Length: 119
Image (tube, rainbow, N blue to C red):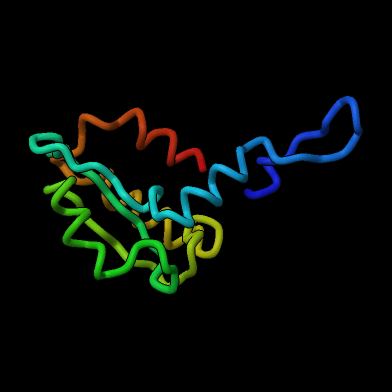
């Protein structure tokens, strides 16, 4: 995944980052990237599925309340993986997705579910 952010510089014939690495470093140093503005009334009340790797630092139980504040109807499923559950446990990941999409209240999402069936 990280390698998708590299590109060849046509002049120097050396690889360089596509992203502004200095801006990312600055944002991380000042915690600006960690701040997410919550605008009252901006919650998404539709169905949302979060699939998190249980061993990942990025979506932990301590974050669930904040997630549910922004997405009141969110379902959060932990899979026993690191940060990439789709790559580290693809069968478990697809089982969770297929079960979620098969629910009667989500039948308006058939096109997305059909895409998953082809995986």
